[in-house]
Each structure stands twice: as C-alpha cells, then as structure tokens.
Length: 257
Ligand SMILES: Nc1ncnc2c1ncn2[C@@H]1O[C@H](COP(=O)(O)OP(=O)(O)OP(=O)(O)O)[C@@H](O)[C@H]1O
Image 1: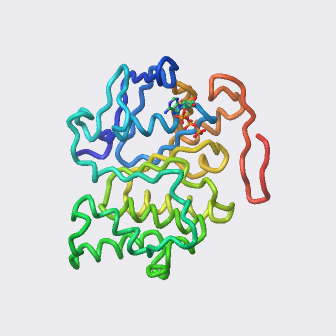
Image 2: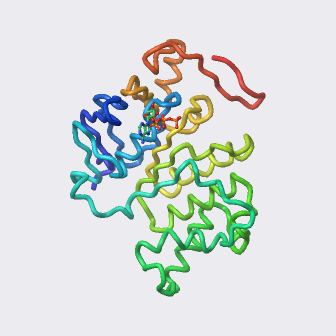
C-alpha cells in the first residue's frame, strides 16, 4: 500500500437518528500517515461519525471504505484501534492491573481463557512501554490518575498493533498538565511509531497545536485542511457554519483569538 493510500474514506455519507438528521453529505478521507483532528461543538455529530467508521451504525446514504475495502466486506478490525471518551471511569477498587487491562486488547485474537504465550506477553509489555507506563505495570488501574488510565487504554488499543488509532475525546476529565503530556504521547505514536491517528475533540485550541490536519464538523464538514491553513484562516470564524468564539491555550493559560 503506498504512503498516501486512504485508510478510511467516507463518500457523501448522511445519517439520521429516526427523523433527526445528524450528519449530512460527509466526504472525508483519512490518508495513511495522517494525524487528523476533527473538531466540532457539542452535538455536532462527532461520536456518530466515529460509530459509522467503526461499523456500529450504518449510513443512510453514501458509502464508507476501510483499507480500500467496502466497510461491509472489511474484516481486519485489529488494524483499527479505538479509545473512547468514557475510558477513564474506573473506581479505585477496580480489580485489574495495568497488565491485565492491556491484555484485554489481545483477547479478540487469543480468546478470553487461553493462556497468554510469551509473544503475547511481549506485545503487552511493548504496548505499555510505548505509552510510558512500564513502572505501573502491576498497579491497579483504579488507583491511577485519569491521564494515566487513558494511557493504559491507548496501550490496550495498541496491543494488536493497529495502523489506524481513533480517539474520541480522550482527554475528557484529564487535568491540563496531563493533557499536554498526552498530546505529546500521540505525537510520538504518529512520528516515531508511524501510526495514523484520528482524534476527535471539541477543544479547538489545544488539539490543533498537535495535529497535522484539521476538519471542522457541524453536521457536515465546514473546513478540512492542514493545521497551518486552519491557523491562517482563524480570523474568519466560519468553521462551524456560523460564528463561534474560539479559545486557544498557551503556556500562560487560555487566550482568545
Ligand atoms: N442514540 C441516539 N438516538 C437519538 N439521537 C442521538 C443518539 N445519539 C446521539 N444523538 C443526537 O445526535 C446528535 C449528534 O450526537 P453526537 O453524540 O454524535 O455528537 P457529538 O459531536 O459527539 O457531541 P458531544 O461533543 O456532546 O459528545 C445530537 O443532537 C445527539 O443528541
């Protein structure tokens, strides 16, 4: 597959919940090697778009292809890793270690009750190392901070070595310092480990500093371009189809643009 082959492609996709139109005529390509951020206000259809990509919902109109195959024929789901926004909700008593939680990412392959082979254990250790959590390997997940838990969930998604990693609002509930570390981790996964990343967020300011491409969603795609193009257009405030007030984060705090 060449470097710029699309890993996911939506063509003229529309979706309704009952009679309520939620997504309208979406065309979007995620190229291999992309680090694409999709931003949109609450209720703009971001999670619905992810569910369509993951095959949990079917489009009413249009088509989706994954790794150059029509989605309904696509079977290699271990090529796609998914981290949801609700991942960091473990109570402190949750009885599973970091190692055990990450091993769950392999169960689809090895079966829930089969013993892990050495090569499986190696993959689990490697995924934990990739997210910088090796020293917490035997800690209970519930005793970690929200940011650390979210790293563990990334490791769980990484353990089957996916090419495309989809993260839906992964920093909800994570404190500001951990958020910037977390984006640093995503940048490393993109640059050093060659992952293609799709990051969903309503936080225009923080995420657009890290991604290479930005798409603005509000029922349809109002803008899709490089981060530089996004920043250059920032004065127009047209990204969501109507004026919005944009906030950007900097090291001194939050600033208006
Ligand atoms: N299962 C459902 N049944 C009916 N309507 C739904 C359902 N899920 C979402 N919606 C509606 O569809 C619209 C888009 O929801 P979606 O969760 O995709 O938006 P979002 O951009 O991810 O929002 P947020 O940023 O608040 O998570 C919203 O108006 C929502 O109320």
